Figure 1 (cartoon, rainbow, N blue to C red):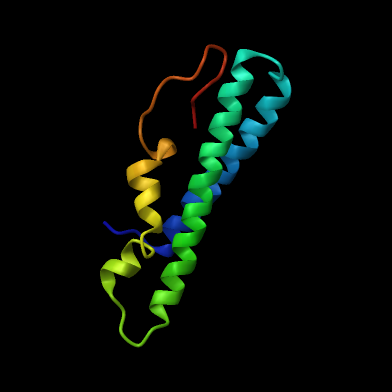
Figure 2: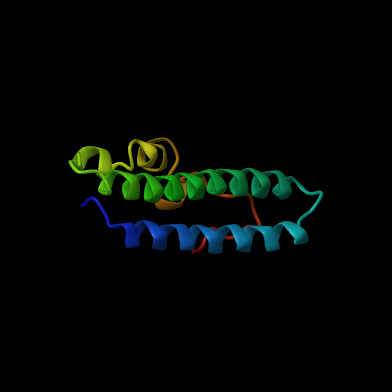
Length: 105
């Protein structure tokens, strides 16, 4: 299924929550080995969040055209390729976090 703009906005909201949770966690583990993992995770999720926002905006631009190319609309003119092929850490199973960091959502 392609997913609606509402689905993408919900995914972006979930990423916001995860990023905020990690920022709060970062304050408790500053100066440890886990701090580097948290920093990297925050950066990765922030890139995914930006790609989702870009996809939503690109879909709006594409939908405003007289002739809509469904493939271009569906992928957000390529923005979703990053999230689901290159990135997408939150939506796939990845490596386990260091000890002491929960990967629960």
